[in-house]
Image 1 (cartoon, helix red, strand yellow):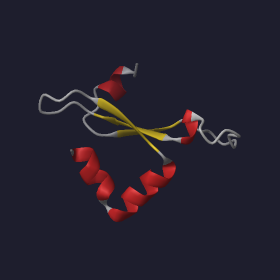
Image 2 (cartoon, one colour):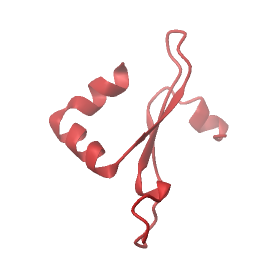
Image 3 (cartoon, one colour):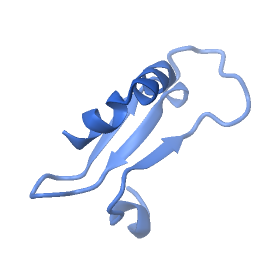
Length: 70
């Protein structure tokens, strides 16, 4: 699913697939951001989908990193 360097990364990797053009459908999956969280302590790597608004809110409040660490 992901290139080896991304799949084997030891840090979180953020993906933004929207591009520069506006998307007419607000429910289009490309409006969201994705975070690939690496494997650690026997837990599998996971892919998290979050809205841009949630990303901004949690990043500003400092909750983004604590939520991802769980």
